[in-house]
Length: 515
Image (cartoon, rainbow, N blue to C red; front, side, top):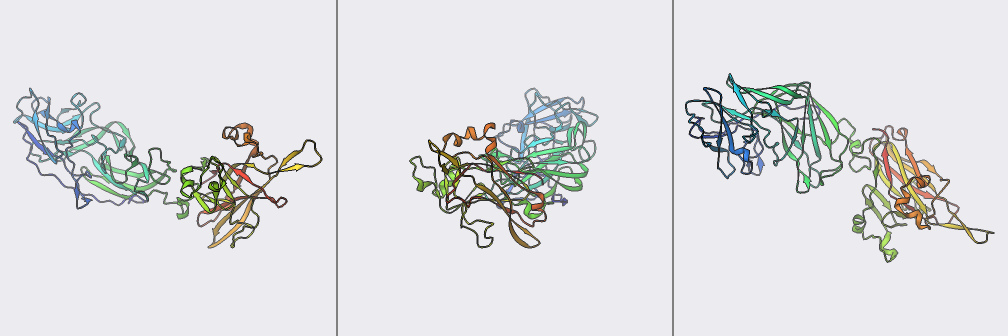
């Protein structure tokens, strides 16, 4: 399969129909290689292309007259989807029973089909083109009108000009596609404008202009999600060297049109042969880079799918907090705001109790005596933020302090904001042993006063003037070197000189610094 190597397996089957006789009518179907025949709740190995009901171009064939190469239009009035279809000469078409050479279907209307024939070779200026960008627009199929097929006297079906690469897009837990697009590349041209030589037993397509060494296939988006399972890439038959696929995965799965995509990765297959009217099986495509360690593809990690330098800003979605019975109640009912247990939202664990939700921020008490049994005085059991990471990077956040101390001997009374020390702890597994340590602690020189409403306004917080209040903490490559699974980060604050210290944290931001 296409996961380092490509398993080669080809299948073929022709649909039975009367031999082409030219006139007064033509009854004909296609060869194999479309995923549209449904048998026993599963698709057959060699499904057959069918004529559709809603594609007007499926009701047009073009016939070349043998004596002078003139092209004529044959039409169908069928309103059903069918394997074979009957076409009648259009109005004014002469009787070609004993004077026709070839039949062609290009998937184009009469005004746009500019094919012509000379000495048994069919050419065009634009009609005979295999596009380098193909969007799936049929369920588990290939792009409509991409296929081109021909026949000549004695054939019992239209012979497909192209070959096919079948591959499977895996689905995620919600049944949606986990891959948005696949770009197939080779040292030779895979697509472009072609000519068709059907002087021998089989039609031969060759690229004559606008050659492209890549073909990109886009998964279909319909009814609110991207569809997975079997898909077909249409390719010019031939032997391709250094054949490879660059896969753009979704971070999780394609359950929305703007679903986040991860870092593209490339897998190699070596030499691959695409045969006319047959499909080569590419197997199930991976939705994560198989060259990475298994943990590096941990989809629960907060950095999964985010390229180096791209920031993942945590979501404080009210709908998720409400699932835990937590909401920012405007009546100042503090009970509704309390995070009484550990809550997971968008990859961030909010370690209650001792935390409260305010819509645009989470306020946390300081860590005092609440420590984990496994890592006392390093990893807290409450009042923390934690998430998993696969790679080193930087953590950035804004914290507004909600406690102040009166300054004595002043008139009027003035206040000083209590200053927290922020701690970043990291739990890693190396050499089979899991350990935890505090990798950084930061005591800011300036802290915003959370009692002043201006210091809680999002537009201010994200402005240049408030940059001095933001805190950046770093997990270095040395911290992550040799890890055997995704590491877990813990953020919290302390100040042993004060009894209480409450800080409002705005959504955490994590930026991977390297792969």
